[in-house]
Length: 325
Image 1 (cartoon, rainbow, N blue to C red):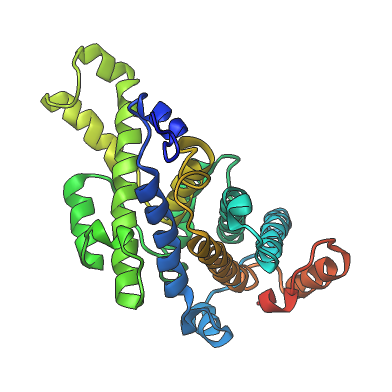
Image 2: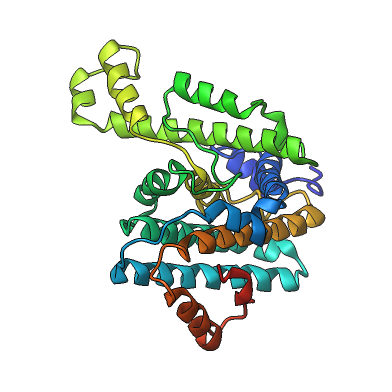
């Protein structure tokens, strides 16, 4: 047998019936980030745009403990952002760093979200999913996130989520297979990824319901009976989808679920380099949004002290003047 072009590992993993097609997994991954990068290349993330967005944000009553949490989480976010800058500064082989870059990107976003929560209510939690739900309540629902980071679904019921998705525009899976080239195609890809994340979250909710005592007492398989549907739909109504859920799904795919799509098979070096750059651009925009909001919530004059201190004493390289307010 001629084994010259045989993909032995792929064939082996396909036997498990759980291995997704690495070609399409790669396209969906890089094209979502490309769509985000196009969307953040906007005046909304300029200094003037951020000032207009957050001009009326009111400073809260002094809360030293919550403010300290803001600074702590921003330092973590800055460090991850600096790592993305470093990765992008000398990419000899993007595939060697691409998976770790995704994890770094995620934690830049995640710590920013926690900082925004603590700047809002001080109610951040110690795990990812609860924080995503709080970020929805504190930031997204109150209009403090900027497009494309404001895209969300308030529930997971199919009727409700379908209506909300349609309010954003066209839903078509081809827009994650085709690389977006303009703002219209970018939006279509973002809507498609939002829809896919909703479907993913529905599966998680259904699995959670199956472990529920009330569901087990029904002694049914699936959700065809009225009572089973009610239990499932109640769970759907308690959950939502926003950018942090999407980022969490994105990290999980890269870090846990699919070993092949970033490290094996087709060589797409140019796309991998662009993807790594796009992650930096998106993380940079998210960090600027976070700083613009948080600086207006923490104790007056303390923000400048924080920025001057980390500029002087941090041991990673970052142009902090870009995130002063």
